[in-house]
Structure formats: structure tokens, C-alpha cells
Length: 474
Ligand code: NDP
Image (cartoon, rainbow, N blue to C red; front, top):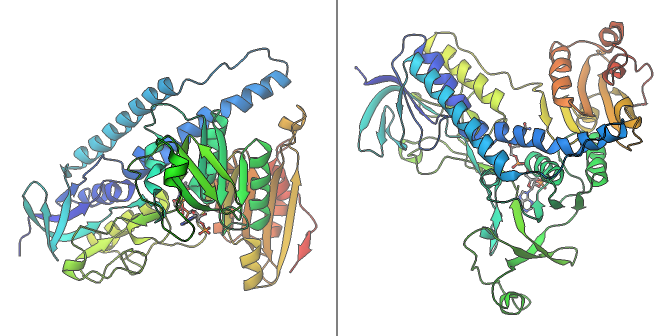
């Protein structure tokens, strides 16, 4: 049976675009639908604008450091509007590149919403119906607010890049990647940041020592971080007579009147009641799996709303595959890209390729950054007997200026095989460093391989090859 296209991709984010391009390069006829902007979360409202904000926010401490080194220049004030204009110009430029890459690969773009209407059929909001040999769902995810009255008062990460002005004060709720990164960014840009995390320590799942040091460094730079704390109640701060009219009697649900983000009064589990100019929920992301016809064709979706796929990204309907955040395997751009390329190998190059989700390096762009690969000490201990090599110190660059800033380098080593099972770095540029160490860990190198490598001096990361004695075994 002849189809209109060989492949229809739903979603123009990092994964979908890479799959569409690589499939089209094999000679397949490919179409792609994107209802928003080409480039998806990473390029338009995630990694890229976030990293540019990280760069912007670092200048305050850099210029303070410059003064300690003898420079007399002052930084002056940060002009958010001028930065935002430049930021959006850059995002437009990047979106243009994504479009021209697709165009050059011969992919037909549809700037509209698509819905699956059969195992080999997609219907567009424009009224068009297209038949396809295969369908690839790469619709990504979206930030979620907690389900409680007036949670519409809180922004989510999508909203940050479009703010008209930076607020004077902000409460960030959450302790994951997004919460911690934006706490550091906004603090660096001069916003008074308070952060609530409901658990005992931020960055759950990462190595405990690394999490502890990040929390300490965040507090040290002025972030008012409260762990074991959450919102119990909130209401609009500037509504007439807000406190009196809005407070609900004990045991009753507060009226849910808020419709958009704004100044807020927050009652916390620690008993405090505080006003914040803005509230920011960084409370996780959910897969974009609703309203695209998945249930109608019998695709299995799990309890968290993610599409169930096998190792080759195939769904329960053989002609339909899914990659990236909508499958909720590892929510990282480079992983989605790999899944997209593996899909093309499997379906269009007759080379079944499963994506390797083991030992994926990643970085949290806090200040300092956290770079990590492999097992945290706690997880490694559960698995086998280990040696822990760890050092934490004040690095030369900031120690010279008398700053209390500390870094951490840590290796988790298997006693039996001597392989390095995990590496955790807290330091400026830890994201860059972990990419390099990641190669060694992924290659299964041993502690002795690390030791054989001569140190690069004077650097912080020379510690990775000079730690001779374990600090503990477990
Ligand atoms: P995370 O899942 O990392 O963090 C969500 C946080 O919100 C957790 O601390 C969680 O607490 C807390 N939380 C969840 N629900 C509630 C609630 N109802 N009330 C209070 N707190 C709540 O999600 P993020 O949104 O930070 O990031 C999503 C994903 O995006 C990440 O997992 C990551 O894969 C990716 N990402 C990667 C980045 C990078 O590579 N640098 C940057 C940004 C995002 P608890 O721990 O108790 O569950």
C-alpha cells in the first residue's frame, strides 16, 4: 500500500528534528508537524535560553572577583530588557537554523497540531489527513504546577524567558535541576531568592556529598534555601483586603480565584507567612501525551502519562514509535537525539539499534555546577563493595581573593573490578569537565588507569588523577 509519506514526525524538538532529518537523508519521504516553534523545549524554552541566562548571571561574581584581583571596573546594573531582546533575537536565529536544516534535508514542515487517527494516519488541525508508513511521536513534556488552590499564581519555567521585568523577590518551589539552576541564575541577576524544597536535601538522586556542597554554596551566595518546607496555602497579595478575605477557616479549602502569575502571599509548612513578588513552580515536568489520539489507536501509556516503548522506541502499535521526554526515560536533550538517530537506524537503515541509557553524564548548571556520571556513592554501596576517593578544597582562583567557595572531586571505585563506577564534580565548569571524565567512565577504565595519567598542573581537576588513598570503603 502506498502512503503519502514514509514517516510522519509529531513534534519539532531536538529528538523529532534529528529523527526527521536522518530518516529523510536515507531517501525516505518525511513530514513533520510542530504546533509551536521549531526547536522545542531545549532551544526555545529550556537548555539554550537557560544557559545564556547562566552566563548573564555569572558576571556579578566575576566582576567582584576582578576587583579582588586589582581591577577597578564596576559592573553597574543589569538591564533585563536589553538582555531579553538579545535573547529572543538569538532564539529566532536558532529556530531559523532548525527550519533550514529540515528544509535542506527535504522534510515537509507543517506548522500546526497533529493528531493520530489510525496506525498509519495523522490528521492536522488544518483539516488535512496524511497517511504514513511510520509515525514517530516526539511531543516532549511540559512543566506542571502542584494541584492546589491558587497555584495559577505561580509561573513555570516557560514563563521566565518572557518576563517584562525581573521581580524584586521570588519564591522558587522544588529542589530539582530547574529549581536549583534558576535559584542561582535569578540570585546572580540581583533578585532576592527564597527556595522551598519539601525533602531533606535538594537534588534528590545525586551523590549526597555533592548535594550537600551545592546547598551550602547556594546559601553562601545569598539564596534563602529552606529544606523540609513546602507551601500549605497561597493567595494573591495585591487583591483588595487579600489577607482577610482570602484566608480560609481551618479545614476549609481556600477559594481558587487566581488566574495568572502575580504577587503572592505564601503560608509555609514552617509556619511563616511571607509576600513574594513572584512565585515559580519548578515542581517537575509531565509528558505531552494528551489530546494527540494515542488512546484511540491503542498505544499503552503508563501511570505517569508516558508512552511505553521497547528498547527500540517502538510502542504497542508496531507502526508507531516514540522518543524523548514523552517516553520519560531520561529527560535530557542528547538522549532524545540519540533515540531519534537509533530510530532511523532501526526503521530506515535495517539496523536495529537500541539506545544505551547506561552511564549518561549530565550537569546541573548551578553556581558552582554539578557534573555527574555513573553511580552515586549511596547507590554504588547497595550494588557492591566500593572505595570512595574524595577531596574538597578552596580552589586557587577564588581562594586568592579570600572567597569561601569550595569544590569537590569524587570517584567511586569498584573493589572487585577496580572500575570507576561514578564520578561527581562540584566546581565551576563541572559540566565541561564531566564530559571528558565521562569518556573514561563509559569506557570502563579503572582507578589505576586514572592514576597512570599525569596531572595537568595547576588545575582543579588534577585531583582526579592524584587521589591515592580512599577516604572510606563500604
Ligand atoms: P525534577 O523532577 O528534577 O524536580 C522536581 C522537583 O519538584 C523535585 O525536587 C520534587 O521533589 C519537587 N516537587 C514535585 N512535586 C512537588 C509538589 N507537589 N510540591 C513541592 N515540590 C514538588 O524536575 P525539574 O522540573 O527540575 O526538571 C525536569 C527534568 O528536566 C529533569 O529531571 C531533567 O532531566 C531535565 N532538566 C535537565 C537539565 C540539565 O540537564 N541541566 C536542566 C533542566 C531540566 P521530590 O524530590 O521530593 O520529588
